Length: 370
Image 1 (cartoon, one colour):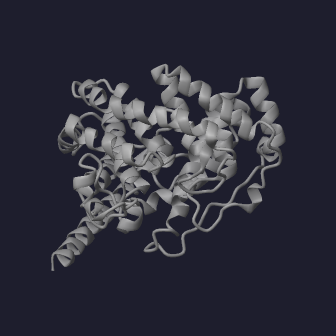
Image 2 (image 1 turned 90 degrees about the horizontal axis):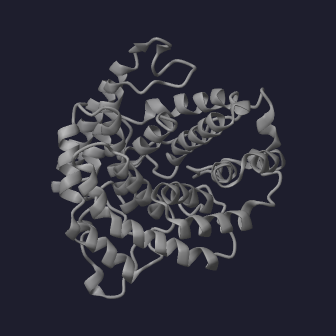
């Protein structure tokens, strides 16, 4: 009965959000309709308020939940909230982490947006010394847990808190710092032992995990982490040629193996070296007529198939980032626009299979260079 009530409440919530997004789809900016325009949508406050509803809902939704934990005894059979009191919602730990990141990122952009009080309250109730200590203790029992995807998002959350000009930001960042430092240490210990990069389009992708970690290392001045990432990125990718982009996507991808490598190497390599490397790795990106078909989801109730909307967002933020850093690739913004516009209408109003995580990908794509 309780599960039935939760399902009903979730259905009502998503229906309301769907109506809200439909109303926003008719809004216009100076460039035209926000969601239907061929150009990159502008994230205005009404859309941001709708996107905020996704983490507000899921970060305190404990079930359904995928713990992905190693069981050593009956004592390990505990509830998500007991195991991970800071990040127990949103179906899994990493989605809870980037759900918290979403709240911070949106409030930074729109400090007085509808829902900001609730988000601030959640952040301060969840990110406490005691709650973060529980995750620190958990990682001591399994240092491979959430590697590298959850690690990467935890470090991204750390950077977001430290760059947030808000009275609650510094205390939250200070509380999260010990866990971020542990994650950095786990990266540094793990990378020399990783003999080969993992080139899949899902959580284990090495290049994606190193990209957010690199941003954290630069921001925090973590020289040992910078050196570890730079060394392994060059070891893994410096000699790569002719990435088979035409083989993508695989059926469950939410990351592009080829493009995630580009996103990392544009950070690691100096300009001349990077451009030479890119011409050997994905020479087709130079063409002003370059095209890339969007990923299409055939069943929105299937959590694995919904990954393809995440792929559209992550491809978009790679293209935007590349074009922003190197204007000779500005033609790729059109490809990014196509991808983001294809996926954005599906985010709010989607089933929980996508709703518990896709908002974070949409936000990162919409705000990647702001």
